Amino acid sequence: MYVVTRYSFAKAKELGVKIKSSIHKNKKIDVFDYNENFITSIGDVRYKDFPTYLIERGKKYADERRRLYRIRHEKDGKVLGSAGYYALRLLW
Image 1 (cartoon, rainbow, N blue to C red):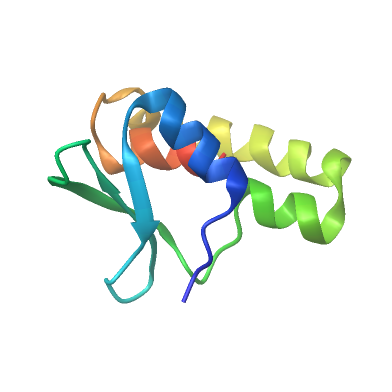
Image 2: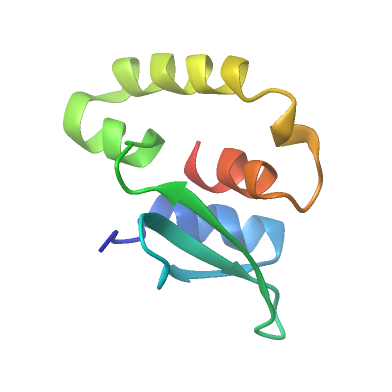
């Protein structure tokens, strides 16, 4: 089970959503609106994210991984309310 980081909680607050560890297999986080309505599940537990890289490898390496992720996911990160949108903003 993925442990949601303070980084993701802070980003969720900025976006106006609530997050919890996912109950779905192979997902990191479930995203909810403030009325507790499920929006989407994001992140694959088999892959790392910015906060994980930050802890394990340091800021320089994490920033490079973030840059590359944003290049790869540029299009799906722009679709407001999509899983890609929330993954980009909560995990990267």
